[in-house]
Length: 298
Length: 290
Ligand SMILES: Nc1ncnc2c1ncn2[C@@H]1O[C@H](COP(=O)(O)OP(=O)(O)OP(=O)(O)O)[C@@H](O)[C@H]1O
Ligand SMILES: [Mg+2]
Image 1 (cartoon, rainbow over the protein chains, first blue to last red):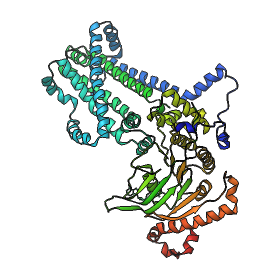
Image 2: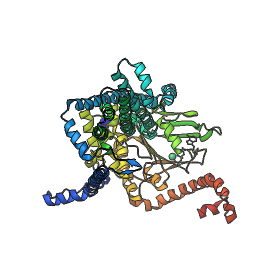
Image 3: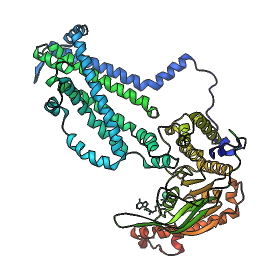
Image 4: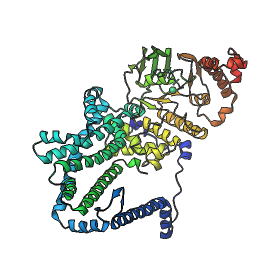
């Protein structure tokens, strides 16, 4: 095989590369714990600062909330009926022992998981294929462009007609919400692939399939993950709206039900739960992105 | 791995009656016309010429990325009809895969050929060692300097054992010192592998220092204006660049290129109103100004 021709005669001298080969100096002694801690502090100083400020500002938010509600401030907006942080905390401690509350959360998460996963499983490959094959792009793109501006919530009546059960229509709404951001971002990533990388792969012997797998796909990954992050956000928006309109379970339904039952503390609890779940799921995606794209780690 | 007997010299590039025009709204743009070049097996040939004269076009046609409008390109008698691992290419832009480590980049061609993982890992390590890059095998390209990126690019192109190596201004973006080292490395690899090299550059010194022969192209539409053999002995040393032989070659090529650059820029210069500055547009006087 011709490649082994290169490997012949490794004993030949190569003066220029010898110069270039000088690597970094090896460290003589492992540094003490004190120096390590100091170095760690220096490297992470700006991160620590951000955490400190972030915690302070959250505490300030709680304090303002507390003051506004205890003094029942009425200044354009009315805080008369708004629950105080302590009331919300009390209803939180009660709720975590309530299997029904946990069921609401579990069901919402399941709907997100199914709807979002379906959107990713269909949206990403479809975007990749549309980016690669012009004909498929020309066929699908117009339909996608017409459907895309319709907010997922506007699909609620249609979804109820389309699907036999309520559960399915809610999952469908969640799916629709995340599908288009995922599709559009994947497609965008495909259009930005550097053609010189494709050429480089071609003259290393890569055929269509390998180019797709080894160049187009990894090159689009950053945009795919942007799509997944945005899609996850829209999935929650769509899910909560659908649950409020047509649900029987789920954290969106819980929040709306609390209003009907005049459980004001539970309204805030539901809202906070939605916020925490949304934040958690976008953190999960970011983590997955870092795992899948180690070359982008800073 | 068993010892492979030295292969018969390969990599004979033959470009005959070549012309290529691009389609554009204003009609076809003739980039290269009526060009014949050849590279003998194991030869190092450079192409120099003014900017925009069609050097990259010609090289891309040899690589198989562009189809000639007329004429044919053959390598060892076989007509070039598309890119292939037989013709390795190094691009002016850094073209390493950012999502692959240095070693994985070098392995890429071998992987495409279906070589098992352990075998190609070993081959890639050996090659990286030859280029002084073994310490960086696990790095991602983003963390490398420009010179290192191009070194990896060359190693990657050579890993599959191509018959021909095509380089399109590979060192254009590097500083002068790095350039010199890269030239040495390229020469070393070329001599060791005995493959044919077609090298495009702006830099006349570089062309002379590296090549057995230099083609000088005319301004667009590009064709071959002159073919200059470089009879300097090998191995070449940096000190040769001061020799009278080298300087004579340099002067000759310089004046050829300058004429063409002026032709290429003539239109622009008069557009900019330089006639009003009392600069003659014909003949030597402007050449000296520039
Ligand atoms: N895709 C294209 N469509 C139309 N014209 C093109 C195209 N690519 C190149 N050209 C024109 O063809 C001519 C030759 O281009 P080419 O890139 O081969 O030149 P070059 O000698 O490599 O230039 P440089 O030294 O700047 O790299 C240029 O004048 C360029 O404007
Ligand atoms: Mg060029």
